[in-house]
Image 1 (cartoon, rainbow, N blue to C red):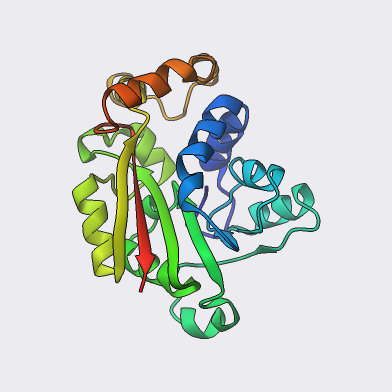
Image 2 (spheres, rainbow, N blue to C red):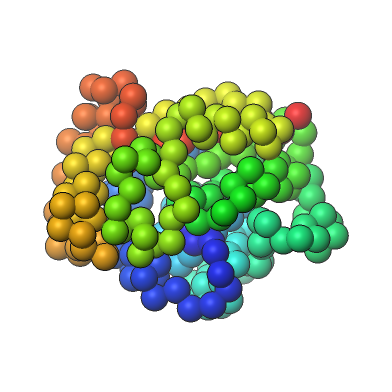
Length: 240
């Protein structure tokens, strides 16, 4: 779950390290997107492999990737025997540089990646080019621009989304949207307080650990709200 410049990413890496210890949360995110993923999969922006591990543990055909070289090296060490590649979704010569990978995947998914990219439509369009006709592009991004605060600034987020704005980006990228939903409603309060009210520049580890222990309650809250609100928004698009 990382994309952006190719150098060191201390703030993003610290966030990924914190999230790596949230086993219940990572499993919840995996279970949420898993029904939309099939066949040969590419994860764009694997970071340190928090979600990758869930797919690998269940034997899925997964190619891992990241733009940042330190993450690519770490993924290669953590997932021996699995393909790990470097992919820049907005490379000026994308079709030439990645020609051997175009149209080779059944599913491309990117979680907390597209918000780091200035030209999000171009990034989504290139995700579409990587999948076969009928394949899925699965994207999770932060929700609600009114929640944009110091945490977003430190993490390098260009924007946050709603269902409508994410669907619009998918449509402009040539993807047929088949599913949308919000995810993790309760955490909107924590994000607003931590990054907004207190303007903290990083995710507090102690609070995150407590949040992880209570994931069954947060899952119930999402079901109660019919997934109509959340800290994140998910969209699934089919390549035509």
